[in-house]
Image 1: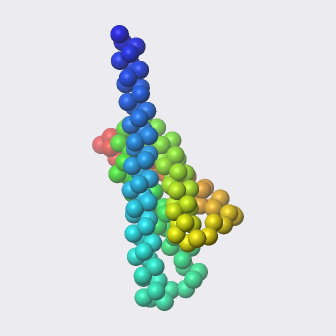
Image 2 (image 1 turned 120 degrees about the horizontal axis):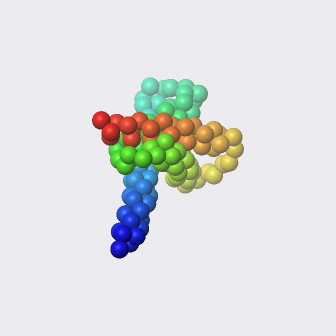
Image 3 (image 1 turned 60 degrees about the vertical axis):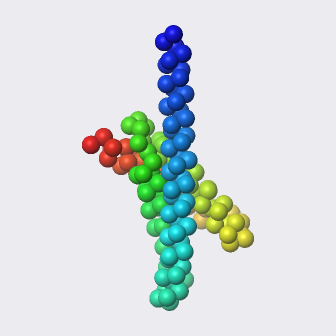
Length: 135
């Protein structure tokens, strides 16, 4: 009897982790879409240089991952690992969405850079999110 209950608990926990990851990515993607629109408006209004746009995009992606992890990662274990998964998944999801909107899929060193930065941001965000929940 105990093994069924233990398996049910593990299944519920696994489903909870998947749900947290999906929720974090949805929140991060919504934030990123809104932030990109607002930043495009700000760049247009203030005539910012084209060199500032990649930096603004990286900041938006990092903040989006942080916000997604902060609002979604609530279970106390393995925040760093779940943050890595969220950051990596968001990076590819954002690449697909923004490439579809742009109509241009270009693979290169920049997507690898985005993956590394997104993964590191996710790891740090996951650690922070889980430890904030403890207190």
